[in-house]
Length: 273
Image (cartoon, rainbow, N blue to C red; front, side, top):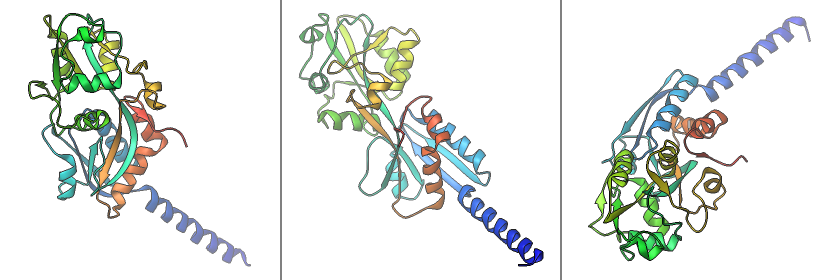
């Protein structure tokens, strides 16, 4: 082989390599991601990091607590829905975990509850905290809107779909849930379910609330990650089953080391494989 032939072959090889890297790494196009739960901050951070890694990709985040994210994907108004429950008509990619915390006022001295007792509380079978070794106060139930993924996961986990009483106080935003629990005073004492990431944040911030252990397991990141704390929900990206290069690229980024690092700032990343 002559020097000229060697150089020519080397240049062709480099060109092919660069072309392969560009095709693999540089996603391009417009992507719309929709949701209605507490994950907005993390999804926005993922989207900005993904755009930085893929300068020709543009991600719009549409967040509305009254929306139905899965339906928006099915009708083609979005490419990815962020949810906590699978939909048989859509493909699902799990990118993390979030616990579901049982939030009560700091003065509520109920020590712990079982998963069955949580189901009985939120289905209206247990109406007084004294039945659980707590104060002589009635339970004020705080529910979440039907379309929110935290409610769907909560009801499914406990087997209480459509069993939460209509008398429960319906609240969408996590911060309003926390304020309501704090502001509910005897003869009532509130019980709410909330994203564990939010619950741990407000507890550590000194807000007058606490999270109840469930089945003698503390609601903490390690116990959610290894499954000992059973009230947890997956963080899912739902998309159409037909292959979409940009959707695939975003899902791969979310599961990459940089993506999982971002998710781990608030939620529980996927276990290392």
